[in-house]
View 1 (spheres, rainbow, N blue to C red):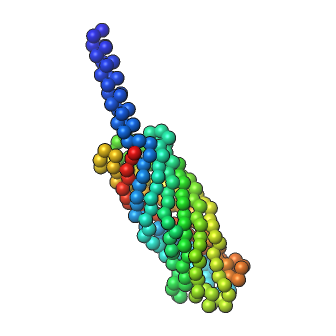
View 2 (tube, one colour):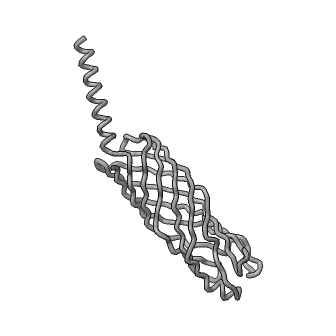
View 3 (cartoon, helix red, strand yellow):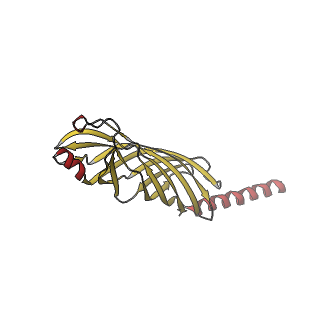
Length: 212
């Protein structure tokens, strides 16, 4: 009986210690990442400009990113991914840079974390991306067409995510993350749609996370 009581007491202490360790990490996590945004090179042909398919595309860019994650349980979390409006270059094959626009792409994903108490913590996620497009400036397109050009002002699409956190301190982590977001924009000249740009970028990021 004495041994049984001792075993129960030890189990209770260990269980309390594990619970306190989990509680000490907190339900929130903030990460800061450097992200290589890599749009695919895909667009509809523009017969009026004698441009074939995939002739218009957006240049890749290194951008900063900050995100906030809330853990509903040890395994299930939601992540809000943010940056400030990013100026992106528009390229045309055989012409070069024809202008720029700004994109603000907040993304919300629901994540599953496979090993929430290990040092190596992989996860997957899926969610939604809403991109606001502003500051469109396409002077070369305006000159070539003799009219005013623009891009549609928003895009709504899905988002997929895979990555891992690696614990390096009490509440500190190194993070590696890959996302695929689905972003489309209509190219309009004189108010009429002449092509559709498909960005659908892959975002490869590395950064630092803090749990609190």
